[in-house]
Structures are given as C-alpha cells and as structure tokens.
Image (tube, rainbow, N blue to C red; front, side, top):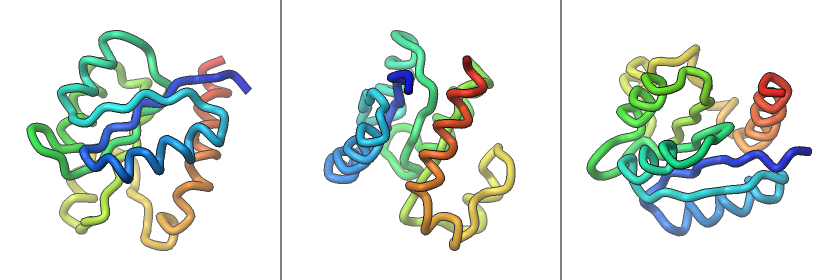
Length: 123
C-alpha cells in the first residue's frame, strides 16, 4: 500500500492520539492539527488523501472546515466525526447521506474501506 497521508483535526489530544494510532496501523502517514485554522495551513503545505475532523472545535467547527476544504479542492475526502451528533448537524453537512447510528458503530472498519477506495481513485 502506498503511504498516503491523512490529516487528523481534533482539539482533544487523547482522541487525536488514538485516531492517529488507528490510522497508522492501517498503513497511512498522519499529520495532526489541533484546530481548523491549523488544518487549513497544513493543507496549504502538503497534499492529503483524507481529512478526518472533529465537529466541535473552538475558532472553526468541523462543518466550516469541511466547507473551506471543499472550496479549495472538491476531491479531498473529508470525514466529520462527533460525539454530539444531532439530526440538525447531519442535515447541515454538505455531503451525501450521513452515516446512521448503526453504521457509525463500525466507523473504523469503514475508514479502512474509504481509504482504500480513495487510494484506488487517486492512482
């Protein structure tokens, strides 16, 4: 597998470290950002296959980050995650149908599938 890079954006260091471990175990390089502003700077510096971002963050939330990323490059995959989901948040997200609760339980397995699919599309 190519060592593609994933950008993890989360202001919670413990969760960010856990996600970093999971993504690295799948064979990806990881760069972390602690805010949406930091993530946008990272996107200016290098290319990423995917961005995985928390929804609730200070300064810029995950949906605003998603919008700004898609304005710059519609091809970058973006996964917005949260422990505080609501129907209103899901409806506000500019994406195909959001994952259901049952689908989110297997999120990490789906990450692997999403990453593999994105890799095939980019090569």
